[in-house]
Image (cartoon, rainbow, N blue to C red; front, top):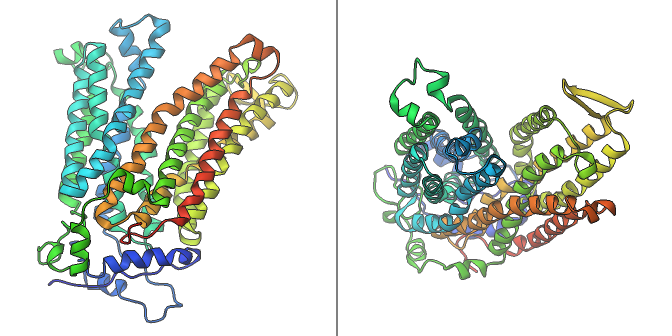
Length: 526
């Protein structure tokens, strides 16, 4: 039984200021057919509310599709980070470099994956607007599985770099996954779906290193299970095989449970394509020439999301790198001189805070506050986050571990209570500042020129984020080590100058976000 129903649902609360943009999207989708599995209850929940002052009932989103989408999304961080525990030992075993140079080469290997995504993320989004979402997602998953196994079989630095580079190319379909999430949810259920979906990355970053650390050199550690000659010849193949298996499991779940969500390819309950039940105006809108990159950048909101997305990824990845380096660096060299166990405790608390924030705070934030304003406020937190780090170094100088005000937090060291408190505040600010990562995909959906251009719009913003993710760690580590390692700078107490540059980038990225509110709604174009 084919259904034709309206999707004109207004968001209750402060986001009503953006309803004009939503109306444009709703008019373009008045005849959008239901996703497979929609029932009469879903139809009734999407019908116009006779009482405009009452809060609309949440639209039941496909739970199985969301679960499968999370299973697919988690593949990327697993493949990306499973090499971290053993990459230095792998390069040392292959005698690729001297021991003191291994860190440099491991950095090249780790950054190659993200760098490759820069070249492919927009193209994957563009292709998905033409052939649909499912083919792009499955091609990427199969490619990740193949390149992960190829990495485990590599016996040269060239082979390692090549497998990571091509793995990053096929993993650039993250923008397509964001598009699918936007297309299976609406304003009434995004406050629950987005926080759940966004947990995939942090969970994957835990599973990946766990796989790598547990199964590296498996033939030596577990000879009863990995006694085959291939595991002795390639001691780091087992974690790659398990990671590839995760990608194949994600492929199977996605193929079985994820339905096509592209407006032109979507099917109704009778199995007919959406084009057969859509209005003429909607069909004409989808058949128009797809927008180019310059056309997308001409839209103020998309341009603001692209530039601020670069700044967001630049800052968040730079903070992850500089926090570890800052904590490890001796106090007289501009850091805190903490023991590795103390740094681990800080990251453990940081991860716990991130999970709690996504589970409890994010649904409330998405439900009660305007997306664009929340995005801007969170971006303005980054200047304070980086500005606090030099102050912590000042506290460490004023209250060294041997002072009476210090408190032991590990078996191998102690740190001032004030410094520890400052660390927790800084980590909390960094997690709040990362909230725009989740808001970005919702704002892209709202301001994309048409439903058929959602993949391109996500791809463009993700391209900018990948660039920021690739260059941020290099820039901040170079600034920090270059300035604090300079004798002239240290003698004059100017080691904090590196933070000024990061604060400047943060302020610039935050100021750009003011252009988000000037965008137009989906379906209207510029």
